[in-house]
Image (cartoon, rainbow, N blue to C red):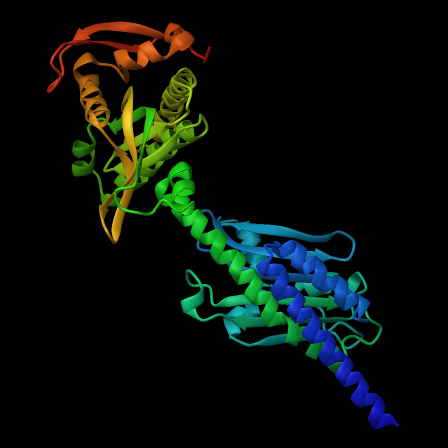
Amino acid sequence: MLTSLTTAASAHHERLRGEIHDWIVNAALAGNDDTAILDGVCARLDAAGLPLTRVAVSSQLLDPTLDARGVLWKRETGATEELYPRESDPQANEDWERSPFFRLLESKEATIRRRLDASYQRGEFPLLDTLQTKGATDYVALAIKIDESARFGDSEGVISSWTTDAQNGYSDGDLAMIAAVMPAIALAFTLRTVHRTARTLIATYLGDDAALRVLGGNIVRGRAEPIRAVIWNSDLVGFTRISGTHDPEAVLAMLNDYAEAQVEAIESNGGTVLKFVGDGILAIFPDADPERACAQALDAARAQCNSIDALKLRRADAGLPITDVHLALHIGELLYGNVGSPRRLDFTVLGPAVNEVARIEALCGSLEQAVIVSSAFAEAAGAARGRLVSLGRYAMKGVARPQEMFTLDPEISSPG
């Protein structure tokens, strides 16, 4: 009789593991996010008699600002996503290095288990001390390796932890159940992570608007869309001189500081950065309404000037090299899309207006202006033209007739 009961229980657990495994795969294919999947798994395990109190799933990220991402499920609150920024916080680093996950990764072990009963020796992991205080009785952490061909960066896979408050902790069947469903969870988590990483990397290197177009299928050489947009062309003043008199690390730090100030101004006002050309930036404001695009560009120009002024004060106080930014704004008809070889493309803008804005930016030095705006821009700006003052008419190389140029009215310090 006992043998038949054991056999029946084993068959039940095997069937349940298969059902949960299939549910995870189908949920991932249906586009459910990690929080929904972990919520569903924990609900099914609880219904099967495995009382979980806390489950965490995590992996490293290939992301310029985030080091890792995870999903944390708690009985009281359900599942929530957690993002871990790249930062040098001594306390956060110390907490991480005293965690079971850190031990798991450093030791290359597949599993760490600690019974949180009377035999547990406190002090090894502060997290587990806290969990025991809250009534947990057993803890297991698992590492699932993912081959490098199926992941980005130096992450080796997915790690998870499972905490219970069952009176006697985990049974062998409970541990077998967790181990059986974890590969499907890791696969679903990796699918989501790879998708997120791809979108982040494309947006990081192409800009949000171009990234959306590429991810939407615009990847064929020669496929370009005619658009009318405001063009931003900015450059650092005297960069060659600065780079020749300071060490490379200082020059790179300065480039990053100035780029951050400009990109923040551009993107927070509806623009998209297309590329960095040495110390210069090419961006567009692609709003379909020319007046709104011009107003956004002027907002960005003013915000950039304010940010650069503040940046120069901070860097000067720290004894670091400083410079100014020359900026030209223009508007015109552009081709926006793919150019290059069949296997090496750039998503950018083409057209006479791109060359013209570069020539306008070159006037900033001789006219001693931080910002110069073309007559075409001023004509398209509508009400925002009131924020500009004329600099007079000037000739440009390659342009048949002199054109009137404008700059920001110094008496208007804020948009409107």
